[in-house]
Image (cartoon, one colour):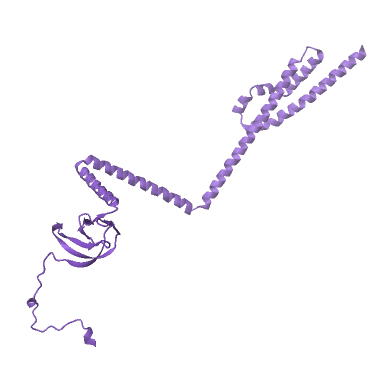
Length: 295
């Protein structure tokens, strides 16, 4: 049973392989092979559509007188499955494709034609660059700019990824403290501006009161006494009108701290003024009453 599966055969010692007769077959002989259709095609006789990669038993032969760089070109024969018409195609090693010869037409050639056109344009550009060195230089400069732009974009993306991935708590706290300081400074500035506005309003009110007192004076003795009292008040609080007239200059020259210090003093002076006017009016009424009794 073991001798039945032996692959090696016995050759006698007087065996000469040159004595074996060789078959003289023609070079154009055909072989039956199993193939698949290389593309979608349509039969010209019956109009049936044959899909790509459909299997057929075909005959294969070498094409005489046609070669490409020492490569042989082969032709295949097969029949349409509907009308049994013969269809032939051959290899195309130049374009790395197949070429239909007889019995059918190829479908969906747009993509293939576009590829061929792109290849032809690339070849034409290469020839132009060889003939025109300035165009080659322009193309190189454009390529270098694109590379630089791509490198910059890549660096920006790396920085963004590092920011998102590596988050330092210390930096975050420092930024938060700086923001809080800025907010406090803004609040202080607003308070200083409000204090300045209140001070200006008080000075304007005092000036209005002084101007009204000057207008309503009629030269009487009582009014003269009131004017004297106002003069005494001015002596006690000197140059208040000057402050009011030049409030803008004071706001530009003096700091907010000095204005804050003088604010309570000015408020006291304004509050004391109506009390003194009341006392002066009371003194004037007493003087008038005494004069009437003497009469």
